[in-house]
Image 1 (cartoon, each protein chain N blue to C red):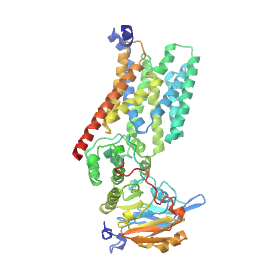
Image 2: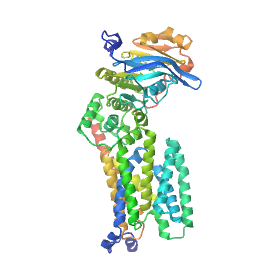
Image 3: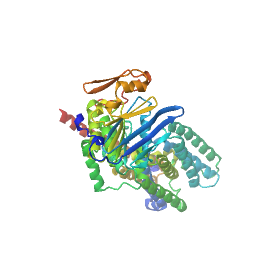
Length: 289
Length: 288
């Protein structure tokens, strides 16, 4: 039992380890910022499953990048942008979108597994693409991740209002002169970019815990246009940074820590939301009686 | 609401204001099928126009043409003296009702706010004037009490008032509404139509509303556009909704009966009847 515990949590030489993963923590925090913001629109546009499909193709791209020595970041960017644009172009209607996603997902996963089984390098690299890795962030990689997240955050802030308008009511937004198709494409590109970054850190299988869970949790407690993005980014950053710091001492990958924190935050928000909802309703009943 | 309250600018003694909307010899054809042709309509400030006609007659297409998203086969549409273009800031649009998903992550007041600055780039920065403008609109549409609730939790009538508020908050010269009363109960129908009627009186504004039933707006409507059988008739209710005119239009005997301040049209051909009394797609208020 204590063996298992020390495998999961160990804080020996913590200070020295912390220095080693400084890059990861920084990358995690910035990813949390970008992921939390993107998540708000993933929820508003009802795209959680699209995120999963994009991450699977991103994984395929990263694995191909590893195999052919092109670079993991480059490969995963190509993979996720391709998937994001395909879903954006072919899946403008919800029903079509679901089937496109279902078609892309196994294809991406299969392609990725093929590339990984042909790859003869370090085994940790392979596993890391699926479940995330902690010390994988070297300086050049950190710079590329920061730049990509920066583009995503800046891009989202620019299109924030018209994108929300289109996400809520495309017909009225178009009548107002908002270019809904162009905006959807812009969003898919931003989503593809942030997914590629997430795959590097939390792994392809668990991207949803950064891009969806925090926003879903935030929406449980509020619908305010200010509070939701603030809470969503806060939750995502806490999950990312907290996950990395907990994973530091243990010998398991980073992703279980991130996903667990993310999930616990969601549970807490659900409970809080249910509590909030109950109050006014009982007040209403009392007033009616 | 009584007939006496509906002012008709075209019958006033003063010189008429420049038209807000002017449609000349407009036709719309899809393939070999003519939806309507020779449509002529001039809408001035303060006017209330109802667009009537059976399903598939091209009522929504007419609104799209005015919005600039549906090109005409022939003729022209001018808005405030200039040809229509997509995304005119001075046109408010209330599309055919779809209830918002329960989970729609937006509060009522933010939904209305989209009509104010939803088309602008840049992040939404909090501002006092913006908040006050939205507060005022919520007050106008009697939505202050549920301003901070999520739109998905609201009833059909409440959502529809918000849609009208969203369209009006940009202070449009022309308000286009597509079946805004459908699937609302009588009380909510009255609330929404009163709201739309009031909006053209207070502002320098005209209303074009599609409706399958003239009766809820009978007392306020100035001009009727009747689309059917590939044609387009325009005129007052008394000019268009008569047995003679509709019989001629449909090429079959049609009776228009006026009883207790309501108009009933009897004898429409089956093809035209389709959808005239479409069952409500959404549960009416109170059944949510």
